Amino acid sequence: MPPPDPSITRIDGPWRHWDIHANGIRFHVVEATADGPPTARPLVMLLHGFGSFWWTWRHQLRGLAGVRVVAVDLRGYGGSDKPPRGYDGWTLAGDTAGLIRALGHSSATLIGHADGGLVCWATALLHPRLVRAIAVVSSPHPAALRNSALTRADQGRALLPWLLRYQIPFWPEHTLTRRDGAEIEHLVRSRAGAKWQAGEDFSETIGHLRTAIQIPSAAHSALEYQRWAVRSQLRSEGRRFMKALDVRTLTIPLLHLRGEDDPYVLADPVDRTRRYAPHGKYVTLPGVGHFAHEESPDEVNAELTRFLGELAGPPV
Image (cartoon, rainbow, N blue to C red; front, side):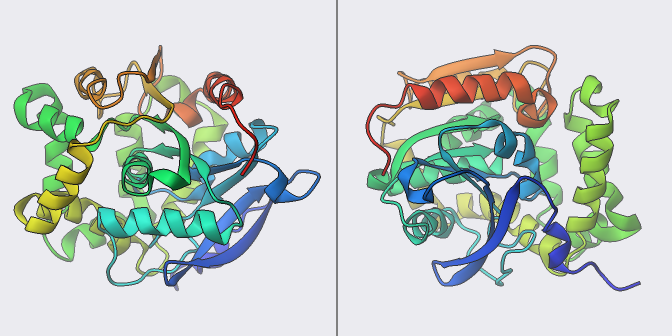
C-alpha cells in the first residue's frame, strides 16, 4: 500500500487551505473563515507540537473570534515542504518571521504547543519586533525546561528517555511509521488525560495523526526537531542559541497554560519560567494532560480570548 499523500491534511471545515512561501520553502496554512479583509484583523498564528500537524488547533480555528487565525504545518510536517535540514531553533524562528511578513502583517501573536511553543519563544526573543505576544501550552522557556530536566530526577525521567531514544539514525523513523503509525497513538495516550481519550474527538484525531506521520519524510523531519534539541547542546551553534534566549527577559505579554495531569512537562520548569517572564500569566487546568488545547478546548479558548482581548493597540 503506497504511503499517504500530503493532500490528506486538507481536511474540510470552516477554514480554507492554502500554500504560502516563506524563508525559502512552501508552507501549508489553514485560515479560519471570517468576513472582511484578513489584514484588517490582528494576526494570530498557531504552531503545533511533535508528531502533529495543523489539525491540533481545530478547536481554536473554530473558537477564536475577532482576529485572523492561521494554523501552520511546521517545516517538515503535514502539507508543508520537508527539506533535509533547517530544524534548528534559528531557522524555525526565521520560518515564523517570514510567514508573518508573507501573510501581509508586521507583527503577530504566536500560540504554540510543545515544540511549537519553543518556536514561539525563539521567534519572540530573536525577532522581537514581529511578535506582539505569545501564548504557549505545556511549553516552558527552553532554558527552564533544560535546567529542570538536568537537575530534577522527575522531569529528567519524564523528558530525557523520549529525547534520547530518537538520537539514533533510521530506527526511530521506522518505529514512528510501522503498523500504520501506532507509535504516535502510544505517545499521545501516554501524555493525554483519561477523559479525552474516552471520547470520539480523540479517536478522530488519532486517526489523522497516524496517517499524517506516514507522509513521506514527515517522520524523519519530526525527529530532526528532537535530534537538534539534544545535539545542539554539544555544539557551539546550540550554545549560542540557548545563550541568546537565556540572557533576554521576555517583555511582551505571555500566557502559559499547563494541564495539571501533564506527565511530560511537570510544574517545575513552568515555575522556573517565571524568571524569564515574571509578568506572565500562568494557568494550570485541572484534569487535563499534555494536550490542553485539545482536551479542554472551551477552557483554553476562554483563556486565549481573554488574553487576546487584553492586548492593546490596533491590528497590524
